[in-house]
Length: 180
Image 1: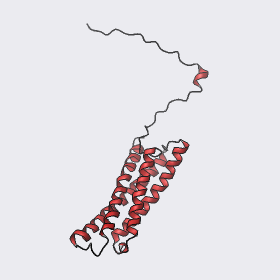
Image 2: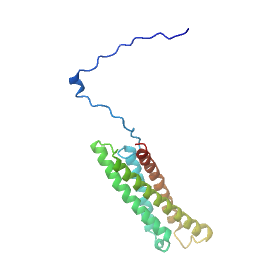
Image 3: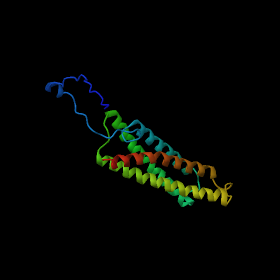
């Protein structure tokens, strides 16, 4: 019969009651993943979202004929909303990093998840609509010589990049909310 032999390991004596009062109890919390609110990764994602949305907004707004197409107006509106939302949450992230607080409050995470979901969905829809119109103008109609195809393509690409940076923020917030 092969039975392992028990081993005796030295154990430290438990701290006295006076020593234990100064030691905070460990909490069982979700590990803060980079990209969640209040982390450096989350701040980087917010600034990336804002940067790409502002570039898409400014490139599209500098063209003279964007108001004639509804999809391009929708892209400008969605990029404006995304840039303001990302700026507001970047300020909250900066505050949380400076103060050293964790943004794990249920109501705050719910607000972030819903706001990120709405903003990223609007941005994706606007980018897809603008991409469709850009392909129509450039490839199907062959009217790039009379339009600002390069600017339209640049603004659409920046909108997709902004959405690509907003999606991890939404998914991490939603995951944090769902894992409670």
